[in-house]
Length: 484
Image (cartoon, rainbow, N blue to C red; front, side, top):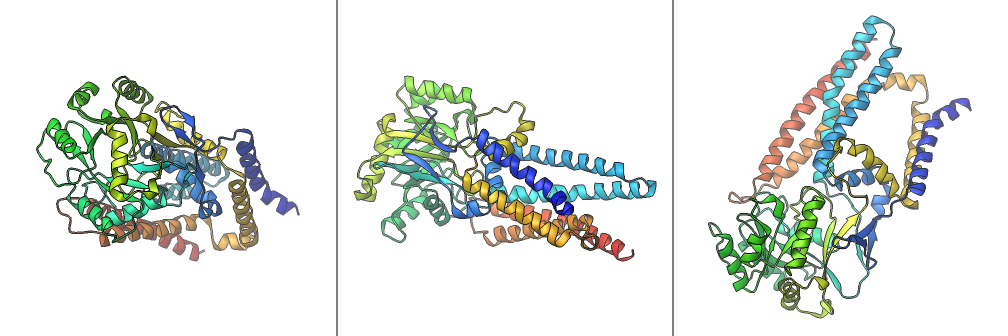
């Protein structure tokens, strides 16, 4: 009985902390209007069953994925993992009295560090490149539809998803329509749009043709219906060509360009600006956001959100809600025209920019502490079912530990220092499988994306090196254990 109580102390403490944080510091996930920063009652959150069932794994991975500065914060996560590992190792070292054993222990802990880094890299790949079952939007409105005005396929140099899979991705994430805005080309998109118009695949979500033109800044040319060349053209020429074809023009991630002024693009006749863009950092710097917002409001320019999806990166967290009554009764051409009309007439009253809000806004200041706040903020968002999932898995792991690892004989058969390289081998095999997946996805697109080549080479190299290292560590540790 005393043994059982001792084994359950830590699980009970973890459960108590989760319950306290989720109740006393609760932060309800909601959909927020990016222009008013107020919750929108017409839209809610849909949490998938698989997400709740495997909440302790999927929940944390997706919460880190949705971090405002995910790439930077994941690097700081590795820093904190190494800090905790070093603190744990030093604590255990104090208990080792013999000098010879201390030296062996130190060497063993140092040998584990590359494996820990490799495990972190495997988790990084899962977070950034695996489409996990994330929470998405629930549309309760009667006359508002959800639209993406900025997305990419592998016909962009930095795209890693086919047109067909991009359509399926938008379908899963609650969109009614989306523009494909590949970099500096739109011919393939026009062919894909035409395939939908002749019913080669379902009409919803509706696909529309656009292009992201890389001039002095990136511009989304929306509603293109005919082919024309943009390579080598000036900003003004491209904007005129798009407008001549009854299209619209939005300035994308303005702060990321060559520092042309907001007035410069207004004078060229653009229809509006992205107020948010979730491709890299999940939210604009607030000063930049307020500057764009004030400028657009004073100059009658429309504001939208740029999802900027490339087939990897942040889980879906941004939608444009267009007010179009009778949407489902319209034909495809009328649907597209209704969307473009709101943009071209700059009618902001019929266009909301919606954000998935699961944590308070924070800046890059003290970003090295962000993993600690991320864990805290994650547990704040849990509902009853998610807390129950955590309790279930914690108790299950505790039971397995007591049942199968509770005796000294079992612990001696499977010591921790042999489990570490074994985990490394499994992670290396995962990287190699991912490398093979991207390798088999390589297409004959010499003038477009090279990312299939780049990522398959990276994953084959990293996975191969990691497999050899982890395998050697596992071999020598097993041989050393068998000699005892």
